[in-house]
Image 1 (cartoon, helix red, strand yellow):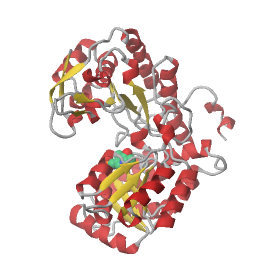
Image 2 (tube, helix red, strand yellow):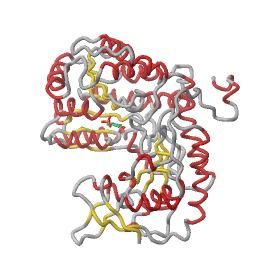
Image 3 (cartoon, protein in one colour):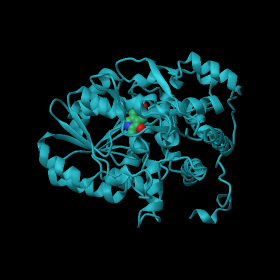
Image 4 (cartoon, rainbow, N blue to C red):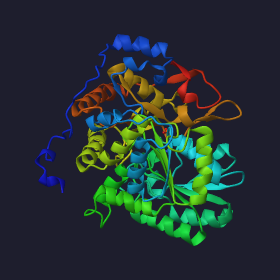
Amino acid sequence: MENKKTNRLRTLTEPFKIKVVEPLKVTTEEYREKALATAGYNTFLLSAKDVFIDLLTDSGTGAMSDHQWSAIMLGDESYAGARSWEKLEAVTKDLTGMPYVLPTHQGRAAERILYSTIGGKGKFFISNTHFDTTRANIEFVGSTAIDIVCEEAQDNQSDAPFKGNIDLKKLRALIAEHGKENIAAVIMTVTNNSSGGQPVSMENYKEVRRICDENGLFLVMDGCRVAENSYFIHHREPGYNTKSFREIAQEMFSLSDAFVMSAKKDGLVNMGGLLTLRDSELAVQCKNLLIISEGFATYGGLSGRDMEALAVGLVEVFDEDYLHYRIKSTTYLGEGLRKKGIPVVWPIGGHAVYIDAKELYKNIPLKEYPGQALVCDLYLKGGIRAVEVGSVMFGKYDENGELIPAEKELVRLAIPRRVYTQSHIDYVLDVFDDIIEMRDQKTRGFEITYEPPFLRHFTANFKPL
Ligand SMILES: *Cc1c(COP(=O)(O)O)cnc(C)c1O
């Protein structure tokens, strides 16, 4: 359908114009050198004002539309039964087809409420890949989270269209091994965030539904990027190119028993979350927890204006022009890097580009964190903030205190929604020319000078070697 639209032929144009601007501070390399040293060479500890292009995360960092901002003025801040809640509830029911809607302050609150209700000691959760807050909420209540992403996902270079899929054979085997009565739920993360933002096919999802039906299992969609996933299905899966993105999402909802959403992604808002359910008894239990910890059932930790903006965002995100620009802009960055010879995880997913730092900075030993070296260089050379997804984040130590590296040394460039323009993305590509120039001379990385016992990537300090 898009080839009929002339503005899509060559230049990737943003389908919006700018009404409000937020100035960016332009800094020098000397300035950034000092800022980085002060931050202990950890980009999480930088002041955001010193960052030029912030690709740390796509979570809650998007720009809202004029319609969302004007909806904010309609916010009804009544404690119970606010108009803004009625709007959000109606939009969510209409989209998901699920009768029970619980608002939460963000995705992990929805996760905690659902997984502490259906989980518990000795229970298993099986997923294509649990997101880290999902895993944490499951393990916190004494359950076990098992990831079984499909085999195609292991190969960073293959063109397989749906590398976010779950491995169906392993799913059947795990059900047989642990017993269906011990499995609290199957969770499908859509798109598969921790596995490169890769999409899940409808065929895979339907098979999961069938296996769940055969075994009486509960199927949850962790669907904070369900609109982006629908775009991939529309373009890559046979039989779906005549269906709208919204219809595709609705087909997936119809196969699910529950939906948890961090609205900070495809909700196109800066804060918010949702839990939707089909089962009335489960909804009552979850609602009790919601009221104890988040807020009354008609606001759940959100203000009326937040709910107004989310009600609009859930509609806007399925706009054909928006989704086209969104996915193409991520792809443009990834393809541009690949053309320059930067090793990227392929194909490019929906919300981020992942760079293989082990391959790019081949001469830096793993115990000197090549991913962290790349993250620091991107900041020094261009004021770009990325995040290491490798041994800083996931590495462990053996009994002699030697690093056991993570499986992969990736660096993620996550793209905020509707924030940066084509020229910002071109600038990021330019900065990589400097990286390419120095990559062969890079032989030393970093050592850790301070680290906390948990989630060390957020607060660790480093020293260049
Ligand atoms: C972001 C995210 C969450 C957690 O949501 P928060 O709003 O950050 O609490 C859960 N699952 C997935 C797949 C996510 O990307």
